Image (tube, rainbow, N blue to C red; front, side, top):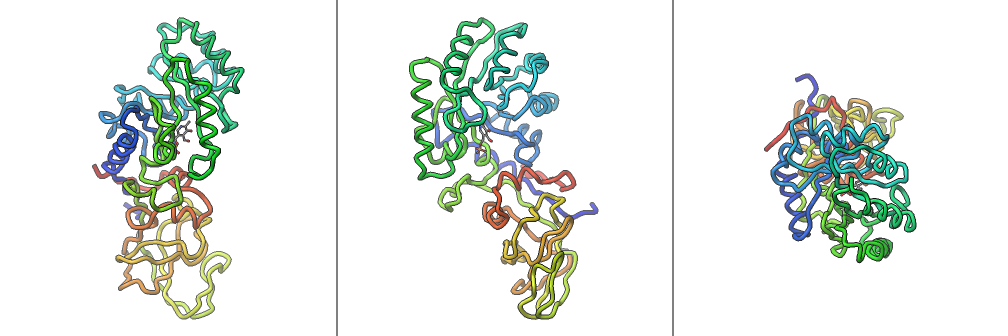
Length: 359
Ligand SMILES: Cc1ncc(COP(=O)(O)O)c(C=O)c1O
C-alpha cells in the first residue's frame, strides 16, 4: 500500500449505536440512514453488517438504493428520503421494492399516473417548519386524501423533518412536533418524525418509525459533551508521520506561513490532506493524537499533507500513526475547529482513503 491514510471502520460500533437508538425508543422501528455512502463509512459494508439487525434502511436517491439491492441486500425495506427525481424511476422503485417519500406535487402526480403492478407503501412528507421538501398544510391534506382513495397505495406513513432539533433548548422543535401532531392526529396513519437529535433529546417526537443517521456513526448531533455518552465513534481516520524537522523561532510553516513557530520547535508532516477529506478549514490548534498524547495542527492543511506541532510528543519517529479523529479525538471537536459539522467531514472522506473494516 503506497499511501498510509486509513479510515478504520468499526462495524460493531455502528451496530451498538443502532441498538442504542432502539433502546431510547423501544416502541419505534428505526430506519438506519445509510445515504451518502453511509456518511462516508461505505454503504454496502455497513448495510451488509446491519441487515439482520435493522428494521429498514434509508437512502437519499434511487441510485443509492439500487447499489444496495445489486449488492444482494434484499431483505429489508429501503426508504428513498428524497423520493423520485423523475417519473421514469418508478419502474426501478417497483423492481427493487423501494418506498418513496412523496414531498412535492410533481412526485405525487408521478405516483398517481404510474401503472404499478402492485400497491406500494409511501411516506407522505409534511413541511412542519424545515421549509425545504414537503407539503404545506392545505396541499398535504389534499395529497393525503387522493392517496387514501387510490388503490395503488398499500400504506401511507406521514412524516416530517426537523430543522433545529440539535438545539435542545430551542422551542422551534416543539412547535414542529405540535404542528405535525395536529395534522397527523386522527388520520389513523403511522408516522415518522425523529432523526438522531429527535431520538436523543426530543422523546415526544418518537413515532412508529424513527430515522437515525449521524448517531449510527458515533457522532452526537449536539455540541454538549453529555450527549456523546453511549455513542461509539465508528470511524478513525489516521495516517503516518512522514517527516520530522526542526525549526527556529519565527519561522513560518506551510502555505501562507500561517503558523509561526513561537520558539524553536519540531514540526511533523502527516500524510493526510484535504484531498483525503480532512478539512482545509482546520485551524491551528485542531487536535490530533500521536504516541498516546494530543498534539495540534500547525499550519494550513494542504492537499496531501498536514503539519503538526510535535512539542511534548514522546519520541516521535517516521511511521508513527497520527489519528486525525476517531477513538481518541472526537470528530465534533475537529469539526468545530474547522467551522463545520461532523456530517460534512465524514461524508467527504474521499475514495483514495483506504477503508479497513473491523467486525
Ligand atoms: C429526511 C431525513 N431523515 C433523517 C435523516 C437523518 O438525520 P441525522 O443524521 O441527523 O440523524 C436525514 C439526514 O439528513 C434526513 O434528511
